[in-house]
Amino acid sequence: MIAFQPPEVGDKPWVDDCFRAAGNRGCEYSFATLFLWSDTFRQQVARMDDYVLERLCGRAGNGYLFPAGRGPLEPVLEALEADAAERGEPCRLLCVTPEQLERLEAIRPGQYQCTPDRDGWDYLYEVGRLADLGGKKLHSKRNHIHRFEENCPDWAVEEITVENLAECAEMDLEWNRLYRQERENGAETTQSRMDERHAMSKAFAHYDALGLTGLLLRTGGRVVAFTMGSPIGADTFDIHFEKAYGEIQGAYAMINRAFARWIRDHYPQVRYLNREDDMGLEGLRKAKESYYPDCMVEKYTLVRQMT
Image 1: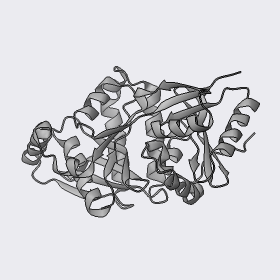
Image 2 (image 1 turned 135 degrees about the vertical axis):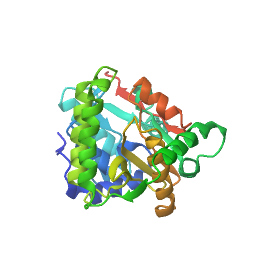
Image 3 (image 1 turned 90 degrees about the vertical axis):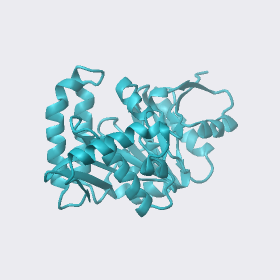
Image 4 (image 1 turned 60 degrees about the vertical axis):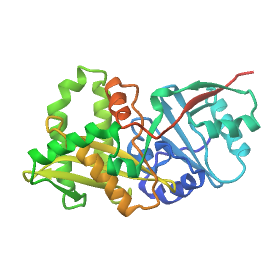
């Protein structure tokens, strides 16, 4: 079997190199995503030549992320297929994009059954559009921001640093206390809330080491919203977390726009903000669609047909 191991912060440089070589815009190809959610999805990594191999447990069950790196794909794929066979499992590839599917079909024509994973598709938005919120479609977002500015004239945005990180952690705890019952009565389960809290605690504990960047929104001296993320590849920035008090009109729209502007100023090479998937939750899907994504990262689950 392949010697998979839980990811450690020290793995970041070589994993980042392989992910950059893959050129994928999906949120799975961020080391921060891999590390922060490794406990939830039982993610483990291994290195093979210039590829990173990742084993995880997703919605479809145990499987592997499509190999990321450079060089011939077939030997790496053969290693994954052999690993699955040794475990007594079919070789299942998770979060596969159309481009990756095309590569696979070139060397394994007709050998994998393909199933769409719509709940896992990532929403991508052009940075400039979220920074400016121009046009009729985003008129309501501008109105929400105007209400926020009118109701909170002392608002201020700050970059998240080690000095104010604890305030974000406190706000996250309060946010969960306030909205726990509301969320648990809806589609989101207690377990998913706990999983997010665990991932968030890892982000607070390893903020600098993971290369995270974020902003907080303050009014009346207290933090009312924050967001944080990290780059994916050459032209995409992943938004890992975003929190705001829902009763403060415009807080979400405000932190969203502020971070888009900050990314545009500090990462001029970034074209897209990846706001990740909606997990099949109706409310989350509606919220993401309300910003009219410019494109989606389509994902599929592939299972090798047993002969």
